[in-house]
Length: 451
Ligand SMILES: *Cc1c(COP(=O)(O)O)cnc(C)c1O
Image (cartoon, rainbow, N blue to C red; front, side):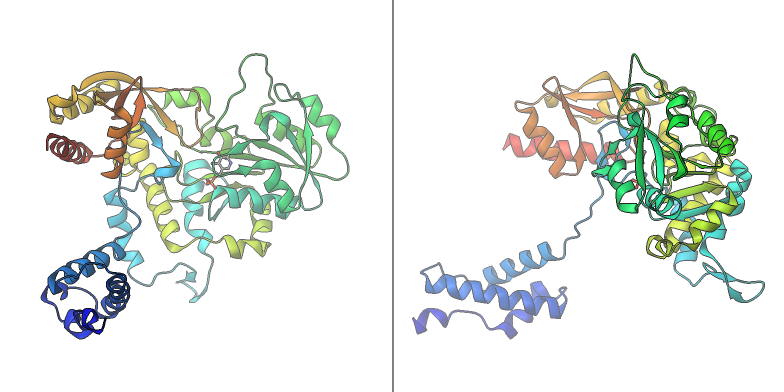
């Protein structure tokens, strides 16, 4: 037994191995000790002896695996622009370059340069929102879910919030409006039915303990056919008449710029909502807006001031990164530099552009996959227009087992979908350079199958 173990290499010798010289010493030593422990037990159980070089290769492989980052960039060939599982809105290089000097240095995040005193991090977006939407004030928290919670907690703790049964939604990631309300301390007062709610229902539900009339965007579902919902405009009027607060959780807010006519048919743009003079509105920063993860709240200054008094805000506060991205993104909207906002750019793609993208991709795919161009249904995602497809194009690939091809592509960082027995690569959400990544992945797959 003594004999077998004598073949185990010494830790010091392994540490000095040429093939491992790029590795960090502390981490490497840990891995070597772990490896030797397993190797020793293996030998004792009759396992095979390994040469020194084999041990080094093994250790190198463990090191490589341990230092591989978990977050990876992917190609989104699903046709869904704002895909929550794939990181929602993509940043442009331009925006990141623009904010880089600010993030790699100290800055005036909470500092008043004129007076040399402490200031507030939320003021940086105030003027931009005033110019873009004409709103009095704005507040930014970690995400829209946090915004909803903060607003209920501040204004409706132990008080009633009236909401239509048709809007008691659950969105992805098990965010359920009724649960959020309950956890925030607000009392849920449901009115109407799933398909029909009238203004009268709200009127009759108002009582001395009512704090707020609430509206939620239905986001990922739609009530079609025999239905009636009360407009936000009507709710605002009723709230004002009865001295109550109105609040609209928009989900995915967007600026109603030219080219977005299809969206405007289904969703009220921010400008229109702001012009109604609402008490409070909130929406996500990384859905259709195309910025960073954030919950953006705008409305009347007196209410925003009250939100700022809530201790919870300290727990929900955003980093300089978020504010810098949002400032740069809003500035791009203000100056109509939309090329800086990939989400917006993708929403504006014409049929011709999409077809060209598909033709370019087709030219890069090998014949063995029998690629064909087809018309597809893309989606904006982010809970906007859940049932309205955007006309797009894709490439359909044939393979002996489509599920296997989808999986192989996925392993290589290309996320596709399967339809009618074919793997579809939708071009709607492809970014510049993605075609080459797809080409490389397919080449590798073809090669490993030729072997
Ligand atoms: C997406 C969404 C939220 C949650 O927003 P996050 O930014 O993901 O936290 C809340 N309400 C509605 C209606 C939504 O669509």
